[in-house]
Image 1 (spheres, rainbow, N blue to C red):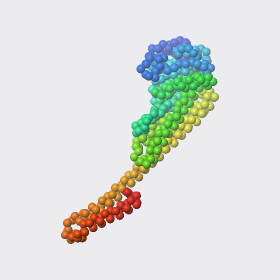
Image 2 (tube, helix red, strand yellow; image 1 turned 120 degrees about the vertical axis):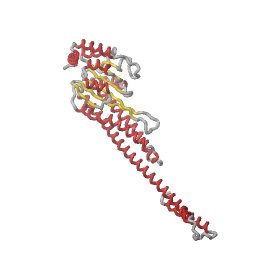
Image 3 (cartoon, rainbow, N blue to C red; image 1 turned 30 degrees about the horizontal axis):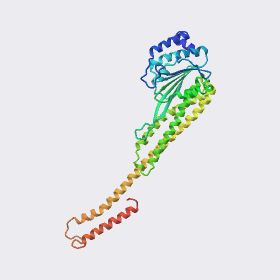
Image 4 (cartoon, helix red, strand yellow; image 1 turned 180 degrees about the vertical axis):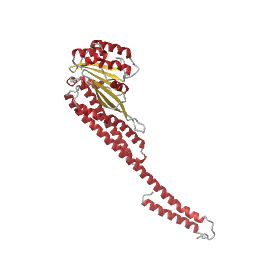
Length: 375
């Protein structure tokens, strides 16, 4: 069934009448929220609404109703609607206009979803986890290294809807790159889906490179001269942040592989070749993250071993000094028993002799401990 037929089925009206009804519903439900720094003056959560024909941007207003009417009357081109953190009320009219499945709409509004790819009739729904590196002067046990967000993409025959959650991952530069390449953009909404996937995966690689620098710094600190005194909390923090990155990257492998290999009505075979390239980049990021995790485990084990060695060295030093102190303590204890017939007790040089014996014994022990590395 065509998109127009789906619209008639949903609204019970003809195409234009249904569009007008949905537009009135959207105007009643959607209110401009300028308190949100990422919101656009277009109203509600709408960041941009653009129509494309033959890979070129169609000039004109940004009214969604007019854009959809133009595309469906001419049966040429598609509408790209960009949203940022829409509420359920704001998204209701858009969902009814494009015939989106309620489950997909719920996921797009609520966010906090796992990367996935779902099919609802002739519409694809994809969820991507976005990541960004959080700059910091010095890595501490509480430093935030990786921040995550989400991009949901609805792809149909004549529309693509991107829903972004989080303070990063803006698609403005991506839109400009696509508009600078009309040949690629002329391939339809699937080209936008590929561009979003490629953009997200490239950011994975950028973040992994920056995290690698943090891991190198921690490794240098651990294997430095006083590495045993390094804060192990930084290693645990990096492992936690790496786990957050892994949760964003690893689950995306299967959806990208399906887009690259499984035939889809809205994804032309020529676009699938581009998804295979994205799959290769994603595999590289996944392997890097796995290697980083193993490396951090090794660094942590090395640090614990260094702490154990340092503690053993401290114990040896304490034991050596205790042995040195025990010699005069023992001699003084013997002569402190106050017996009358003690060796050399009434000899003029008895006292200096005892001190000489104590000094010689202590010196001999000290040389022995020093030679064996205990002091």
